[in-house]
Length: 150
Image (cartoon, rainbow, N blue to C red):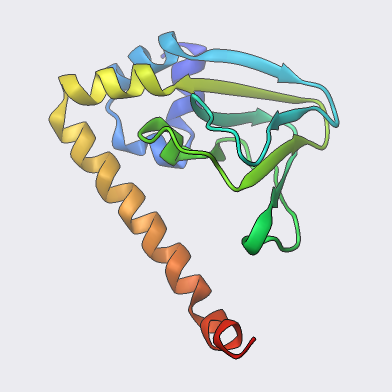
């Protein structure tokens, strides 16, 4: 398996892909370097795909009503904005490189083309995103009472 496909194979979200699909996405992917303090994308931007962390640390900061304490991602294989593989929608989060970072950019166009060729991949992607959103909503449940009382 080539380098980009290997990066994707280590990324949790892309375990929905078989080896051939990983190769095709890896071929379409673009390895990018971000210097420390560089903005990967800003809140309000609609990224054209997802990023997979290869090396380094990135910081995520929610904007607007969801604003809270920033959090960091430093685990190789962490996927930044997997929903951007399917939806062209502005994101409420700004991602910034904390250290020099290497990321693999996976374009939405490539993922959607692959999903059209492999309907079972599209189904697995939808199930994965639905499960991730369910976990996110469950994590917010304890805050619901505080938000109503505010």
